[in-house]
Length: 270
Image (cartoon, rainbow, N blue to C red):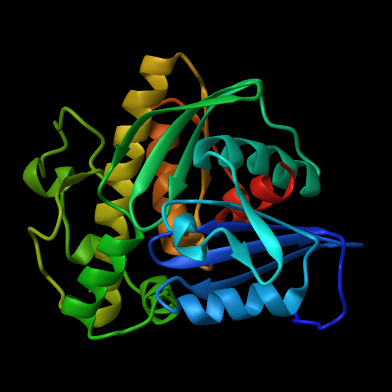
């Protein structure tokens, strides 16, 4: 999204999260952008440069924008409502339809899980494991400083050399669980290659998020788990783990290609 000084009557949706501020605006196409949340001046400058006629904000950091940006008042919309609305819009953009009832999992800095029933979204679970965990452990174990570097590193790794598998515990083949499942994260440490450690970090977060999501989905009586959030952007390793474990647990796993922007798109559509 390229900032322009030309005034626009369009609505700009802003999802101000703990790590990123996501922006969405619909012109002839759906325009999406993000800025680090810590740089409030840059966030406000970009919003002002885009010249929206209306600003609708959501997310925990939204109050930091103040009551107005330039001469445009900042409206607020509940975060979970925005996320559910945005998921529907993005799925439609991708040529798919979401079921009436499903679990929406937002993998941001942490993870929230929303039971969606039509237009009503209720947070019924979550975990402190999320993108913040991934990046923190990646910095400690692999020496990388950016999320993109860590995701690229993990794509070339093999966590099975780091994690202890059920098959390692029961080598005779009489395991009570599938041999390829993880028995204990990081308990083998047969490799300390940065790529393998990065992949193991994705496995630790992905498996546990998927297991929690499976329990929450079962409690909510839904069969479909829809994943979105900035932690999945460009992160094939994490997506693969989530898909594998969700399927093993008996649920359908679906992913929104631009799911990092659910909140911003939902705010723009408010």
